[in-house]
Length: 485
Image (cartoon, rainbow, N blue to C red; front, side, top):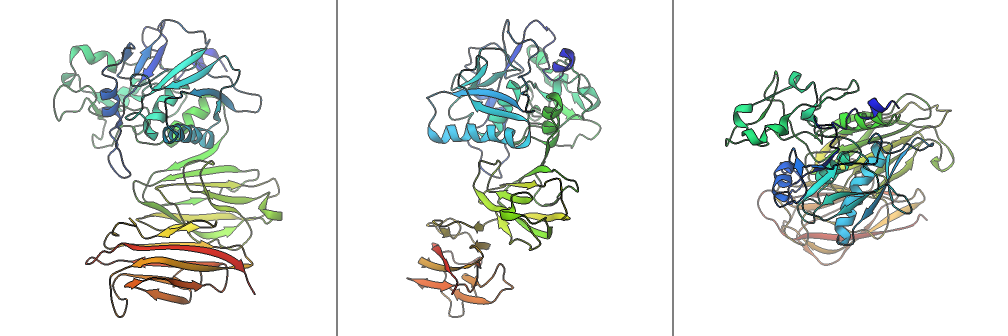
């Protein structure tokens, strides 16, 4: 790649002799569905930072040994970025950091790998804020992910994106075509944070929702007044979320010259369709604003092979291939049962070989407040909030799928729902199939101490209802598989 092109999105500061590092502070207590004000956290966390920062989270280094700021591309087409995580993090924090890294390996050619003997690597530590250098600097390159406030998916992705070569979206040289900077609300000492850079934008559009975009109020000196206003429509939402956007992904893959089939959906509902070509390796990452993801297949015709090794679809309960598998290697003509994730994230993977004969699949997804999909043993099924009281007005579906030659035995050990002689209020229904259209096996309500029922085949569907009046502690159930007679 041409060295000038290699610098395209490194967004080097106007003083090009000062290679930059980026530092950001993000909020620590976001929960699913809340407005994710990451830049507030970044700014708060970086108040005591001893590193020289610009634009709120970009650190400056006097020199660097990297010739063009890009990490090297391997002969296999992937870009391996070695990393080392400090010992100060607990297991949950390490999991959060690695999970964010795995999103890159799922959606792009960037592969974060544990550092062994490599001289150039990123060193992730809980320093004094959230920050990172831009692009490869050479040697042990620090990325600060401070314990607590910075250890969230959106912040980690933001700082890692700095480390692989990207700066803030609003500093693009064409930004005036997309946003207006309201200098009257910016103090003189903060104006530098809005300087445009000489950038090559590789023919890709401005991204208002980029993981690298400033929030609209950044560095405002007037309460209630924004410093960045979209044009021509000032109502266009801007500011980083908790996930890479499709344009973020496209920029990464184009910068590093990678051909990758991946897509992100952040809407409450939508449809995905397999590509109509051979040798496909595609992924769709779905992240709904809240709740859980429920997916059903509308059409399914994937070429059959032994154990579905050549052509298949696989669904993960999370944002990467390291997440728990919900649906493992489905192929053929039979439509799989509906799938529900345990969080607001789901990953769909489609693989085809060079002799594709099936027409592929079409699936639709929507947001549900509860429910689940169960394919493996040793898992528990509970009502929402268990052992605390379940919320009112719930309508939850749980699908259990056993291997083809087996049946399902359900055991409910704890059961406390609203009492009703007809079970017309709060209730748990069990169906002998994959939906409420299957034969009803049992319907329970009130207080029970031990309940059991069995399917006649490999599918069982549970539906839990609650109304708006009485809420109890709900239920706890387990299940097992056994051979059909």
